Image 1 (cartoon, helix red, strand yellow):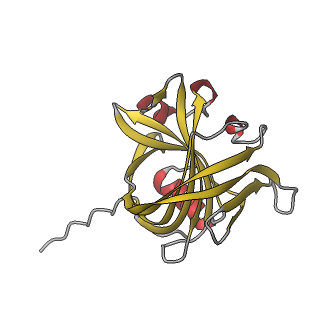
Image 2: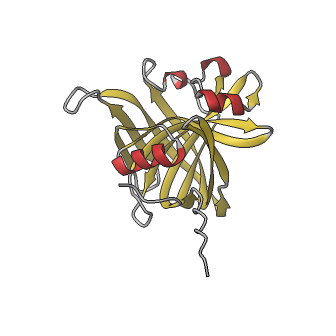
Image 3: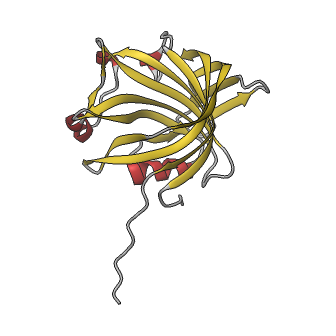
Amino acid sequence: MYPPQPWDLRGQLYLSVFAVPRSALPALPGPLAAAVRPVPFGRRALVGAAWVRYEPGGVLHYRELLAAVLVHERLRPRVSITDIWVDSVESRDGGRELWGIPKDLADLSLRTAPGGDLVAAASIGPEPGARQAPIGSASFRAGPRLPGRWPTPMSVAQALGGAVVRTPVRGRAGLRLGSGTWRVEAGGPLGYLAGRRPLLTVALTDFRLRFGATAPAAATWP
């Protein structure tokens, strides 16, 4: 069983931004494709790929790999998650049922060195005990830390039950510049990122965020 929304979460996030030909992007589900369009970056679109470690202190703690496209809905910026894996059944089920986020399970490894460098890898298998198929791996070298705590507002748009669900995300994080090297399996689910170099890599350190909206209170009679 998963917690009700909103989810208050904390942890570390390592993000790389790629420019990908729009023709190579994964297709969005029907209702979402009718509502949003990728934000154009020349003839390309911007895809963010991130490794996340959600740590104790939030409602759930687990690891995650995701890819999301920057889109707009009548010029309003949104983020749409196209591929995502977690190592928590609660996170998978909650993400799918609350917000339409297409989470699947995977084996995820995130190892952080004392200086902040990260080595990460993800793989999936069709059946328990079967040979694991790699999704990809990455390494991040930590760079300078920017002063202060930075706001991280966004709106996530997903398809759920034939409709579009728009989920607010609010939080703050430390911000650290860096560099990332990705090794993505060309024949895997993130194959559209294989061989591409990120335009930008940053780490959101010690983030705290609230994912989702508080349900309105039920009306009461005097």
